Amino acid sequence: MDGEVARAWQAAAAVVDPEVPVLTIEDLGVLRSVTVTGDTARAAITPTYSGCPAVDAIRCDVADALRGAGYRDVSVDVVLAPAWSTDWMTDAGKHKLRAYGIAPPSGRAAHSGPVPIALSVRCPRCGSLSTREIAHFGSTSCKALYECSACLEPFDYFKVH
Image 1: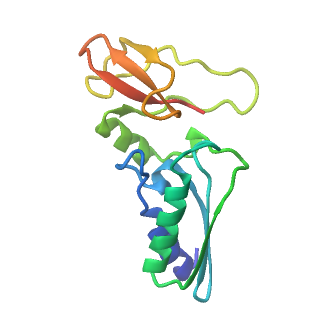
Image 2: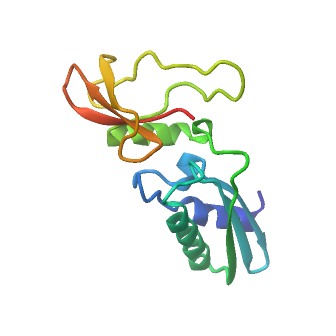
C-alpha cells in the first residue's frame, strides 16, 4: 500500500460503527478497499448484512473522514458481494467486543457444507459457559440475546455468519 493510499485507509478505518461504538469499521471488516488518485479518494464498504440500518451513517462518516483527510472528491460504494462474514472481524475487534460486554463470534462461518452449531457461548463478563439463548435477535439483527446462569447477567452474542 503506497503512502497516500495508506493515509486514506487510516482515515476511513478510524470510522466507528454507530451500533457498537467501541469498534471501528476496520475492526469489523466492513472497510473493503480504498483507492486514491490525486485529490480523489474512493472507498468500498460491505455492511454486516444487506438490510443494515447503519450503512448510510457509515457511508457518510467514511466520506466525511476522507474529506477531513484533505480529499476533495470522495465516493463511498456499498458492495454486497461477497456477503460480509464474521470471519472478516479482526482479533482486536473481537477483544474489544468482549471488553464491551458482547460475546464475540465463536468459530468460523460455514461457506459450504455443514453449518457449525455453537454448543455454548462464553459469558463476556464472568467467562462461564453456562449460558442460554433468550432471543435469537438481540439489540441488532446480527446479535442474539443470551443470559449467563452463573452471574445472571444478560449479554449480546455477535452471531457467526
